[in-house]
Structures are given as structure tokens and as C-alpha cells.
Length: 217
Length: 217
DNA sequence: TGTACATCAGTGAACGCGCGTTCACTGATGTAC
DNA sequence: TGTACATCAGTGAACGCGCGTTCACTGATGTAC
Image 1 (cartoon, rainbow over the protein chains, first blue to last red):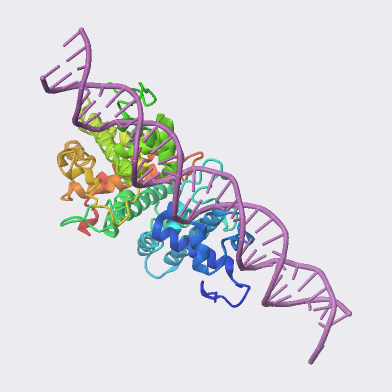
Image 2 (cartoon, rainbow over the protein chains, first blue to last red):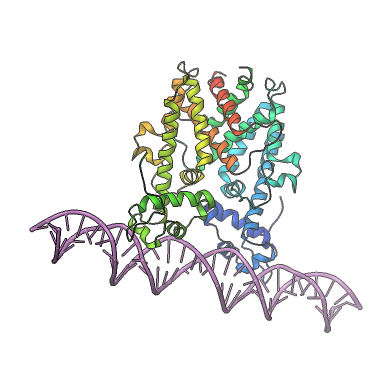
């Protein structure tokens, strides 16, 4: 719990915390208007600073968005790690990771959109779930590896010979699909239709229990 | 197989097929540059027409993108229906629907991006998988209902009491997740990691076989 | 077959706007002595 | 404690650009007689 100044908290000529404030503003605008609708001018205005001031901290618009994505991966990893460290049986904790993932996607659409926007072919190669995995964050603490760990702790007997990383990949894809369909308003609602949390829980359970069954013919 | 004129085929003052050509151009540009990078001017230039001409056929940019999305749902439904009608056992045909879905997402990123862009809260309510379901296309032929049908044909014994629509929802979410992660370059590759098609096949099999297992405690 | 005319899909010039980015500059901060 | 000075995070004006959209207009098409 660090004590940043509030985003709008200007004290005279120097902002004192401009970089953090700009990232925060970008996150908010991306959440509200989507990646395409976000502009540097808006972010600068919200923070109470000239657009040009931004260039003291970022090389340009893309760099700011990349920073938002970076922090998004960090935040997600933090939430997943927190769920994994919590009380309860390994299976309960693993289930809580799924809830944490969906909660993150819903509560932080700005981060989420920045993280999974295709960065264009010209940008540096994206590693497995965030190029951050190889840089700032240790690879151990990447969201994907946390998921694999949670899975192996929850099901120590393995998955009938199947690679835990493959199971984790399926679980992630399902979570991502549910999160994005829900965000796009494409998840049908109605009597008899489960909420996205139930959908994920049932799907993950099925994936885990059905794992390896196909490989045996 | 309708015989449209080619997009660039101008014959004198009147284009003759401008609306189709514009939709086609928009689809291409969205595929190449993403939704945010697509502009009306580009589309008009590609077609060989003044930007103003566009307003004879669409009320504006949003309407053009909506039309692209609309046709995307139609195209997807067509592909799914084609897979479902093909030869083989019901399970083979159902498997082919999954392949058709991933192929559509990969080969038609323009359509796909338009279809699943969040339209903003101000747009008309999106139905289950495309508001088109209630308008142009009969609800029967919506991609989602095709999926449900394929599922029920492939597994006539049901899913241990589980609602086929819920299973279909899980399958769709998994497919969508795999397709979007792959498009974003976030699917880890490497030795031992399955391709997206294998990933989907194994995941779907697990979902189908594991269905209902959770509801019994 | 030929002419008059209605229709309407296109033109092209113009608009106001706001974007991302640059540049020379300035004023606050904090350090050295 | 006070003064001189280096640092650098900010300003503010300006830029070129290309966007989506409008408008009065024009030229091709096809129908009526």
C-alpha cells in the first residue's frame, strides 16, 4: 500500500507524481472509451497538465499504453497470487483464482483491454502472456505460471498424464473467452442461463476431470 | 455464388456496386489495421470514390462497421451450417464446426473484430451472439443455435442432465478465448504445446465428457 | 427509334475539430559552498 | 543561515495532418411518350 498523491493533486509548477497519474488516467479512459477512444490530450487534461508534459515520461502514446498493459499484468499476477496464497484446500484456492481472474477483467477493463490488444507485428515479441514475464516480473510470478502452480497444487495426482501447462492453457482460454464475451455484452442471459462465474466453475471442473480422456482414443 | 463486380471495378460515373465494395474495403482495412485504425477515407479511396459518396449508402462510420459485423455473423453462420451439414458421424461434424469457427476467426479477422467489438452502451441491445439473430437472419440459423444443434446431434444422450445451451456456451467461450488469444499473439508456442486446433479439440472433449459431473457434488 | 425529363448516385470543395508531437522557454527544486 | 547555480519537469504556442461530415452541384441512367 504505497501512498501516491491523488491523480489531480497538483502542488505548484511541478506535479511530483506525473508518471503515475498519467498511467492512472490512461487506465480510466481506456476503461471508459476503449483503447481507440483514449487520447493523450484527455489524459493530460484530467491530470491537470499540458499534453507536452507527457513526453518527459513517455516516448509517446504507444509507450503509455504499453506501460498500462505492463501494470495490468502485474496487477493480475498479484490478484492471482493472493488467491493462491489464501486459506482453504488447494481446490478451493484454485477455484478462487478463477474468480479473481473474472473479477479482474470486470473491474479493470482498462488494464484488460491494454493487456490483450494486439500490439502490432512491429512491437517486440510478446512472451507467454505478457512480454513483461521476461523483464520486470520474474517469470515465476507470471499469471500463467501462477495458474499452472495452482492447478498442480489443486490436483497433485496430475491429469491422467496430460501436461499441466496444456490444462492451464485451456482453463485460461475459457476464462478469457468468458471475460471478453461478457465485456462485449455477448453472454446470453435469461432463465436457466448461468452467470459467468458458474459458467467458469463448471467449465474448469469439466476440463480438469475430462483431461487426458481424449488422448486414449 | 453471386457475381458481384470487383471492388475496384468502376464503370464511369456510377459505381454500380458501391455498397458491397465499401463493406468489403472496410472488412479488409479492419483486418489489416484493427477497428481503431480503419478510416472512411481509406475505404473510399480503395474503392475509387469520394468519401462523401459513402453517405448515399450508410448514415456514417458506425453504420458501416455495424454492417460489417452483421455480415460477419452471417458468414460465420454459413460456415457453421456447412460444417454441420457435411458427411460423417454427428461427432465428426460437430468437431468440424469447431475447426470452422477457428478458421473463420483466423481467416476473417476483419469480420471477427467488428462482430465482437463492444458497441457501446448507446447502441441497440445485442441479442445472444449478434443482434442480427432477431432481424435479418432467422433466430434458428444464428451461430449459437447452430452450435446447440450440432451439440445435440453429436451427443443425443444428453449431458448427464445438463442444459445443452450451457454446454454450448462453454464451448463457445473456449473457442472465442482460443481465437482471440491466438490473434493477440498470446498463445504460448513451443515444444509440447499444442496448436490451437488441438487445444480446442481436447478442451471441447473434456467439457462434453465432464459435463454434469460438478452438479452432483 | 428519338426526345424530354425525373431520378439519384456520384463529385469536389469546404468545414471545424482535435489529434500526436516539436520546440524554445521558464520557473520550481535542491545542492554546494 | 544565505546565496549562486545546475537541473529538469513543466509551459504554451505552434505544426501539419487527416479525420468524419455537410452541401450545392452534376452527370449518367432509364423510363414515358
